[in-house]
Image (cartoon, rainbow over all chains, first blue to last red; front, side, top):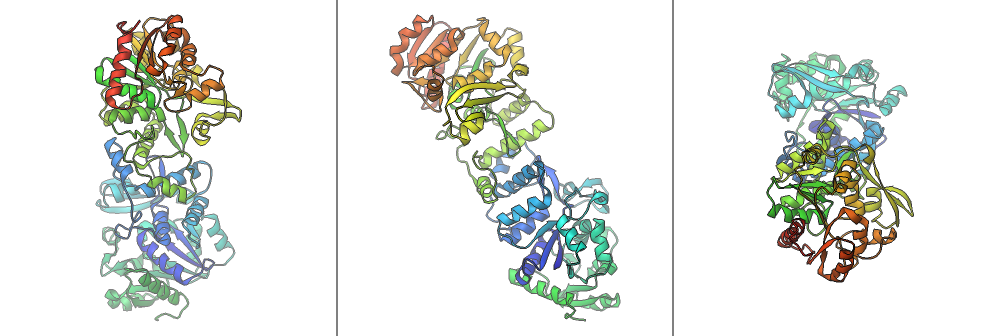
Length: 314
Length: 314
């Protein structure tokens, strides 16, 4: 069983590739919940939804969030009646938030709700929240400490990041199905998707038993760099990396994960960094990492898996 | 200040006429909340919304509930993910429920939320819930006791009604603005709209201070019959009247309200009932009561107001 750690769009696209080369009993996708928040009385889980919509083929490729062929009539009326409109919820998308909120309120766990929603979208591979407990990313910025979506959406990730905290992580355990996989030794490798290390992957690793499993080096770990030529493919990863003094290219991410990652997949544009990464003790594959099509996602997934199996580039 | 007591579509249409002949400081519309319920985690107030949408001119005239030019994408996805779809919520309409629920959860009263929503729709006449407290109509039927919407929408009002109860009425006071109007003696007349007496008007009168004010005969009360030629213009009023053994024509409604109503407006089709109603001590006006256009609503409102002022037919 391969474990994929995923955030939003980059994670979802690699997951889309992984499901094309691994069977449902060979892959479990573990998704960040640090972005989750309560809005308009609804529990919104942006990364879980981006992964779900992408695997279901109903995602909006232009935005990286939400659904294709979406309509905005709810938001139009909400604007008219003076509601909060800084976080946009489409009409189709809204049903997921309402149904999730209703099920959580009735006592179901986030794992159970996620499984039911994914099943209703025809997704056969397990998709798990990192934890069923409340874990929320909080961002210390030069404009004060902000809840994640206040930072990310309301303020467009403009304030400079000074530090990140994952509220609730101390009390959070892995989702039960993930705890069982770890406990029974069924995991054979981990793929860290090209998601934002600080905002998407670290909140997963903030769940101590998940980090402990990674750090045990019981299984190989491969990561796909989310930084290409010093920029994030999408989102503020490069900006945050600089603000945190973590460098200005993919090496910043390599050094951030340090010994947790044994093999890297980097973009051809960063081929010159290969030697530096190897000098840090990691194997490196160089390929096209921009997942502009589902086929490119599949090829990148195959490359990452080959690295896990030790057949990739040295 | 004229008080109009209103339920759903019939009440909303007469209210639409009343606002064309009375200024905002001459009319307060008091709306039934017995239909209100919690659904999908949202507080839904069908009669308040029907009145609001009708006064705003955005109502759906074909259904008698919801909005014109509505879309149903939320419901489409809710159906796909296995949510409850027996009560239909349109995309535009949903914004009102979400925003109302959010405001109520933040501690605002139903009066305050209703005023804000109506203001956002450009409505200048006061629209008040009968009470800010929880008051819920429950229907004892030959299929057991049912919550109102379970009876009305989910079971299409098919079970035979044996009795009605208004849960919470004992503890409910009038909405503060209504209590103030009663307390300061500013009300000069009451119009009972052609809404279902048992399902729409009785839940309003179940609030004891409202009933006490009506029963004090301090001001004249005129009612427009919701029954025309033995049928309800819309909804199950005639069916319920028969099930409760209350007759099979407008006289059943006249006898139900008894001494609470001093003047009646009945349809030309029921002109033959005029004498029987007069023999009960009421004045009677006979006119066209089918509000097929806004102008017909205005004319009917004018007729009802003329009866209140004692200038109507004897």
